[in-house]
Length: 215
Image: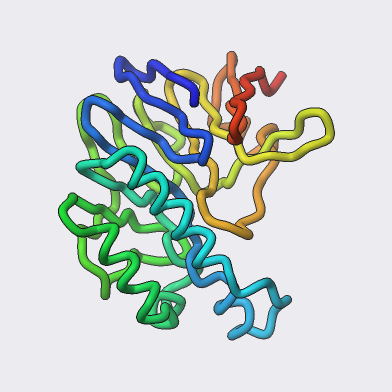
């Protein structure tokens, strides 16, 4: 894991792609995209293995078991689209309910879904806490302390393309936590337009790797 001081707050970038805020006991994950396989099949797209919900929930469950958070923020696009929530199996629904039990849970609205309205928890456009604001898509004129997702950033190192966190000290962009989510290159113009030098990427995985990006 990798420690980060961000807008005066001490955060931890977890190898899984989750963000941990120890003083708040807050766990944040972005872009679960649950139901992607079901959505693609429903729309006649390319078929992907139907295990993405299990894999994503297993990883989230492991983070919750390891960190015992008081609050969980799902940072938007928790489902691949609105109808995907309705396609969730009863077993998956109960799995999510068990993880939610006994803790504050916030679903941030994303561009793929407005938040799973049939599940419990709060449903908000953004959350402001301490010096941080959590929203799905970074805003061009955001004040320092913005935490967002949406872009599914990935960076290439030694021929391997891996999900990564991106930060310039004022913004923090989380990788997609869900399985089969794809991603955008960390140095894509859309991302570089949001960040100011010096910028760095922190790759996910058991051995965090930090390196500069951009011009």
